[in-house]
Length: 190
Ligand SMILES: Cc1cc2nc3c(=O)[nH]c(=O)nc-3n(C[C@H](O)[C@H](O)[C@H](O)COP(=O)(O)OP(=O)(O)OC[C@H]3O[C@@H](n4cnc5c(N)ncnc54)[C@H](O)[C@@H]3O)c2cc1C
Image 1 (cartoon, helix red, strand yellow):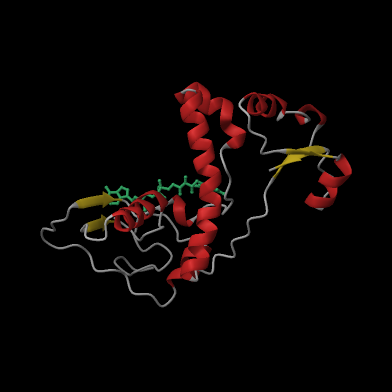
Image 2 (image 1 turned 30 degrees about the vertical axis):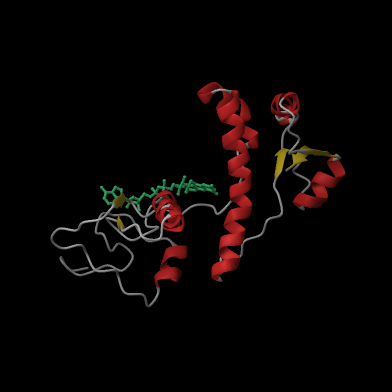
């Protein structure tokens, strides 16, 4: 490619190729105009990934009169938000790490909010007709080697102490059936 020629797979010219999801989503779309000069707003959000975009939406829901400006250096979703695995998980499995980081009360608040967020994302997609193929069907936490069996026990015990039971223990045959693979030896389901 000649110097200065635009490369559609590397539009920012920084060596980061566009991933398949983003290429599909952006096909035929014009880039938003770059910010020129000064802009004034009640709130300026820097970064159009999930965090920035959700924050902008929530702010506008909370107070539609707010003037919110979102600045993105590349395209919205150009970072990890547009190139992740698409698994929408709660933080119940992380309860002990969360407790260590921020205490029991905050850990519970965060885990509950993350679980509610899974449903919120589905409701948001349905409300706005977003073709994300969202499926709220739970996830399997499984062992594929004997050493991994029961890796979830401490978390489940701690959750029970806290009055929460998001996981169901499955029989090994049921884990194999749901995972459609005999590689899974045991597991729990949220
Ligand atoms: C390969 C991969 C797989 C993953 N799989 C999953 C998964 O299955 N499930 C899951 O829940 N999470 C997954 N994650 C994590 C998840 O994608 C991230 O936690 C999430 O996208 C972070 O969103 P964010 O908005 O905080 O940050 P980002 O998506 O990084 O967004 C930040 C944005 O800010 C912009 N920006 C940065 N600096 C500036 C600046 N100075 N001026 C203007 N703009 C700026 C960037 O260009 C970028 O668009 C995965 C991540 C990766 C990398």
